[in-house]
Image (tube, rainbow over all chains, first blue to last red):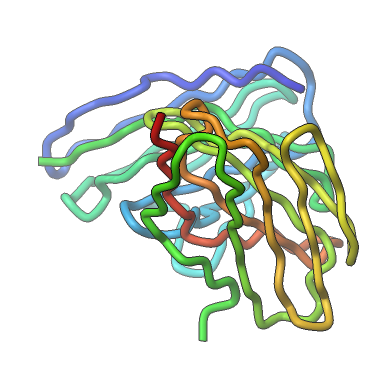
Length: 114
Length: 111
């Protein structure tokens, strides 16, 4: 399966600032997704990162808060904008061949907002 | 009622025990079922992937899907301390619908 590298692995940020998380895959993949994992909660899909076009966001997530880029088939970024303590969570990049295939995950970015 | 229900545990068992982990779901359109294992400070790792009903075995792991009861299980035989992790079930309808995850069950295998 693909090797997925996420940077940074963790960060502590101040309220009102923004953080950009990078996801690099060692091979070309069709689907790239961004998930959020909050303590005691299910993994929640934020958006599908579409290569060369705007990301597709799930209900409750908007582009102004979570802008996503995907310039090619191996790389994507997720920005968490104007952060508040409620944004403290683990953010995970995942990849797959299509919606029916199992996803593979990076190790995540552990974000704490103070 | 949430789409996918999973007992969060924690579940603590002695080494060598048979472990049974379960999820129930409400959406009868789910047809792809997965189990992930997540170690602390790591991303979820795919363990088992099944389509529709039936059983699938891989080493010490067996996944079962009962679509009539909307119930899936993961069995771990001869459990080892290295199996200590959080286990997440996930499922999807297929097509352009995303995976829906359970909250995960935290398992501890005591040597």
